[in-house]
Length: 276
Image 1 (tube, rainbow, N blue to C red):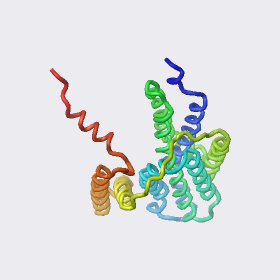
Image 2: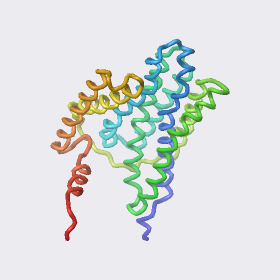
Image 3: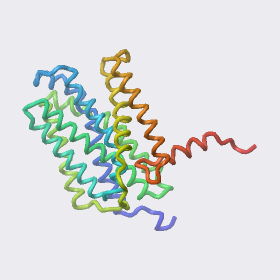
Image 4: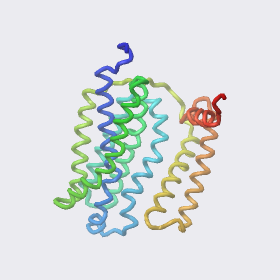
C-alpha cells in the first residue's frame, strides 16, 4: 500500500468532525417523539399541531437535501458545515428558551435546515477523502452512526423528561452543537473543490414539490390519518409526478443539480447478463 493510498491524519480529523455533526443532527430526528405529550400539556396545543415538531423536521430535511447538492458545488466545506451547525445552534437556542409553541416549531425547522446541509456534506466529503479500498470500513462506521443516533434519541429524551424537563433536551443539543462548532472553527479545513454552477430554478421547485410531497404524504399517513385521507394520496401523487419530471430534466441537463448517472449505470448493469 503506497502512502498516497493512506488517509492522512487531517483527513481522519475532518471526517471525525463531520460524523460528529451528522450524529447530533440524526439524534434530533427522533428526540421529540417521547416529549410530545409534555409539550402538548404545557402549550395546550392539539396533537396534530405538536406532531409537526417531527413531521415538519423531516419535511424540511426532505426539501433541503436535494438543494444541498447544488450548495456543495458552490460553497466550501468549511462554509457549509459552519453555516449548518450555526443554524442548528440558533434553532436549539430558540427551542430551549421559547415561551410559545410557534417559536418552538420555528426553532425545529431551523434545526432541520442545518441537518439538511450536513447529511449530504458528509457523504460527499467521504467519497473525496477516503481511498477506494477503505470506503467499506469507513462507510460501516458511518452506518453505525446513522442507525445508532435515531435509536438513542428517544432514550435520551425519556431520561431528560423523567428527571428534568423537555427543555433540557434542547439544552443538551445546544451545548453539543456549540462544542462541535468551536471544534470545527479551529480544525476543519476545506477539501472539496468548488465551482460556479448556475442554479436552475425549475429544478429547485420540482425537487421541493417532489421530495416534500412524498415525505409529507407518508408522514401524514403514519400519524393516524391513515391511507384513507385524501390529502395523503394527493400529496403523494404530486410528489411522485414532480420527482418523475425532475429526474427527466436532470438527465437532459449538462450541469444537473443532482447527477442521475449512477442510477442509470445501476439500471444498465442490472440488465446485463454474464457471458456463458
